[in-house]
Length: 111
Length: 109
Picture (tube, rainbow over the protein chains, first blue to last red):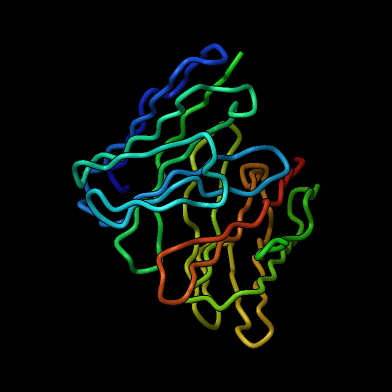
């Protein structure tokens, strides 16, 4: 199994608070991704990174920011959480050969 | 507009039945993936295809590049096959992926 961890695994927070989710990999893969998964929708890309300090927006990036200061870590920040951001968040990594490996997911509830 | 469409969305089968899940896509791809997600669980890759057919145990995946269509078959289905199956495509020349909304399979004993 690819070495990907996410923290925290579960979080409950209140509307308006900042939240940071962390993805950590031990595979030295270049590409890292943040997705959200909601009922009735496929996995939707929030942001992705193609190298240290190189990031770009996905299809549902509003309200989210990311940072990647080291190859192994990709942080997702909700500056001011809203109830619509209640979701399961998955991190994924890829070495650029058209295959992805997923982290275990983080369940976020915004009250 | 969804770049990846799966059918059916939900599927209930009796143990032992042959199951087919379909995936159609509308973009140029370098590869197609079938993923499995058990309830409350993580996402694991079952197959990566760029042409033809692959088999792993009771699972078979096929792809027709000209028709932009793939199928996942499960032979002799078992309750432990109950999961959500997700089709995903990797775009050409860019390491980006699109996902279908998944097929929820329930196999009854």
